[in-house]
Image (cartoon, rainbow, N blue to C red; front, side):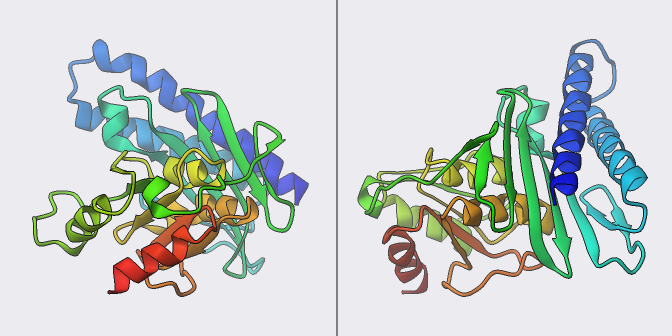
Length: 256
């Protein structure tokens, strides 16, 4: 497990270095930001994939940029988001990250989320807790939604009658604040380390949530669907909280 974790951390740093090197090109290139970010995304994913595959050639891969390799018969699969928070990255807004998770027979066993702007490496191994730059982390102890800072992901170009918009407006009436930040991976690890109390979404992909979900659980937070049932990262439905009564408050509001 330590070999897997160390590899994930090294790969995440390498991906972050690629992203930062590409950021400097945005001010000097004649290419559009959309083209540049696609190239940066691919370059980061290629760097991550190359490092991991060299060490574990019989492992499978799933990544945002059309990466889907079945691998051998090992039962291991790496789930990679080389750039979570694309719009933020394009605009130079420093809230984006690299996310890497490892599954064994569909069970999450390793997860890392790296924020290259703050040099923050969030990491977890199943059954061993969660850490930030090597130090143990835990969620906040805030116990009521009224005192909570919460974050939601919203679909792109969502219309006013979209259920995600309706949930956002609903929780605004009950929480201290509701934000939309643009990086699911960072939202998840911010729940894990106590910076926010809750995050939810019904529009994410497996690579958006795999690593962060494990980190929340290992930090002693709580993860479910917005209806309160067990999550499946293949399904775009997740609610994460600090594990206090806030979780049940949110489920009750979402299902009322």
